[in-house]
Length: 234
View 1 (cartoon, helix red, strand yellow):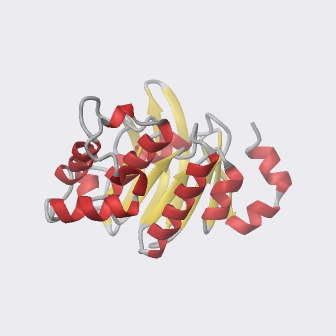
View 2: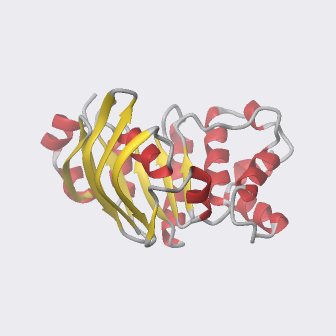
C-alpha cells in the first residue's frame, strides 16, 4: 500500500532523513521505532506532505504522493494523527469530528458516520456536545484518532499516540487499533513505548540518525533485547 524509496528530508539546511526506504502492506501494522531525534516524526510528516523539502519516491495505493498536498493525500485515504493532537479550540467533539468529514471525499453520511464513531469510542459518545479541548489528554487523543478514522481511511499514520496517556486508556487504544486492523485499515505507528507498539504490530522498522538500520517481525525485535537497548533505549 505504501512504498517509499530513498527518502531524504530537510528542515532548512538541516538534513534529517538520509535515504529512508520502507514498505507497508495493505492491512499491516508497522511500528516505526527508535530514540528521540531518530527521524520517526519527520518520516511520517514527509509521507503526509508536511515537510518543506524532500527528495525521493513515495507511492500510496499505486499513486505518486510527491506532488500532492496534504489534503489531497487525505482524500486518497491517507489519514494522520499528529503527536500534538490539534483539537480545535472553541469546537465541540461533534464539530471536531465533522472536520474529518469536511476534509474527506464528501461521500459519507454525516449523521451515520458520527453515530458509528461514537459507538467505537464510548468515551466520546457522552461528550459529543462538550468542547473538545476541555477533555482530558487521553480523551483528546481518542478524539484525534476518531477524527482521523471517521472518513474511513485506507491507512493511518499515528505519531506517539500513547504519550502522556494513563495506562487504562493506552490499553483501550490498543484494542481500538486491533479492531481497525481487523477491519482492513493499515497502520504506521510511531511510538516511544516500544514494547506496547511491538505487541500491536506485525513488523518493526528501527530508525537511527535518519536512516533505517533494522527491519524484522515485531516478535523478533520484541525478543531481541540487545537491539532494543542499542537503538531504542532512552
